[in-house]
Length: 270
Length: 293
Image (cartoon, rainbow over all chains, first blue to last red):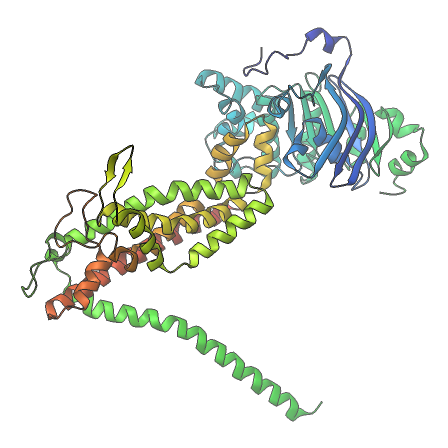
């Protein structure tokens, strides 16, 4: 039972277990002031699996990801067409508010961004508190639970009330993951979550992704080929705004069906 | 290139550098002069009576400025009450909601208002509040005449554009990543602004408010025909009220030495007040930048 209401749209649990896709994307196009960045992309994102989005810089990876939780609406220049459904429900329907979409589809950004005025614990619970959850016991439980999920609990349990910005970069990023998980999203979007981190912190984030995939649908944008190969189940390759290839990660990396995919994953360009 | 040519260029460079340095020093000179005069003339005239007693009748020695000191704080309090909510909310609109075209016009208007001579603000409030009654549904809210409310309002109006622009500027310094992070958590936009963006920039906003207060604390011209001044206590906000700049003005042009001493003392206290605000602001901003990584 989610702590905060997402209106009468909670997921029918059987859908997840029957292997139906979490997100179905059909004919998605995104443009910014006449410049088309994503061109007619269609794909199904599997539930409880990790889908990696790869491609050279400027190919529209992040743009695609941000279309999934309607983050483009912050930019008046952005124009999104096509259809995205979360467990069958149209996310761009007029009757559904972007705030509700973003509660169901959480996001972790490239640059860790814990709120500087808040403590570690307050950062974790901010999404709940600002959505009306007040009970201290619930908040404390949720703090521990999500910090454990983010593999950060043991490092911060003795200083939960220290400022969040006193943490190291890698810890801050795991804190941001805990913060995103605390509102109990169904899908977690990650926009190059480890690109600003050192190899050790990156490895921790990757371990975490593998752990979280048991319970969450994860979509991760990465420009790190090894990361996609290690941590994902499915891989989508974008090039110049087009979805070139999409399939199980092992196949995309070893037997790609498209020449451009092969050139990219073998490092011939990008 | 000859050696003499090289020397000539070095010489020119030295002259220009000396000239710019001299001008930079000139900026500091008035401050030193002001301080020297105020400390030698003003500080020596300060005594306990200055803070605790009312002005004496003209020609009589002694007395103080207690009513003017309290009056200045009352006027500043009212100014903050009128000016801060409008200024801060306006700044939030500019930074977080407004579109580029409307914002351009609002900024333009605010910048013009920041340059409007303070006496013109005084005339406007004089015309609005002083020369006729302010009524609502036939009930007189503020009777005509000079009043503390008129004085507070004029200072508050002057604060609005100042506070609005500084609020907008410090909100723009809050990295967009925090707004995105909050919205991605499914937090509504107004809550994101109130709880995340404004909280992050709070010290900067307070700084802007304090600087605006310091700026209007010494205003004299607009108070001449709004607050008017008062040699005793104002018992209601609808009565004329004393303020330090007004009292300084009256005493400075008065004929008696004791009045001049009081004027110096008042000027000194007023400067210390403004200086204290500025130092407080430095303290706040230093902490703010230290927290930025």
